[in-house]
Length: 266
Image 1 (cartoon, rainbow, N blue to C red):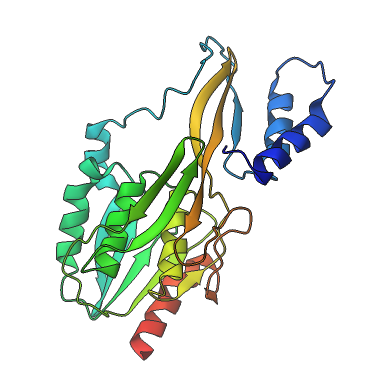
Image 2: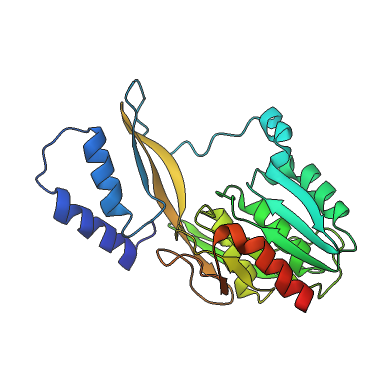
């Protein structure tokens, strides 16, 4: 995590609880550590691996590449559907764009000519930000739009939407969210809302905004540790801890029908 008040708060919170604690690593200690850390960084994970045998890292090896065959078998968790003249794009995962692109493009082609569209993120647990930018590019086109900056210890990366598909400019849109919308799934929902693209419908999200990196800490312990934070180009903030709040609150299971009603009413 970059230097600053949040890193200091995380260190202070853990020091207050665990300084002088000589217990060895265990499932209970890992769970307790994670619970305290998540008060500052909701995406920080500490996992106990009972079988052990892990080799501790001196630095993160990064995220392992997904199996292309598995991505293809799931169609990158991207599907298209229709409810009358309203197109529905379900994005339930964010595989790397080079693997997801064929399935995303096929879905967008199916939705061409829709009078309105719904983006369903209720099952989106996160993944590749490039793919999120491609989805936003479909909704925000025709040109690239500055979406966010991701601030890490070694610098910042600016993110823009990637124009894609042929959705007519100004096509009415809504997005669906819920408790399983997480990480980069939350990013997609938050930026959709910040750009004023349409209402978010459903339930609030968990609030995991930090970018994390995997690292093995011990023969029995692996973790996802925060390495960067997000600054939205419009709000100047992000959804850490607070989560992404719906514009139209309702039960997650009712969100699609509520969104369809809104879009049909104009």
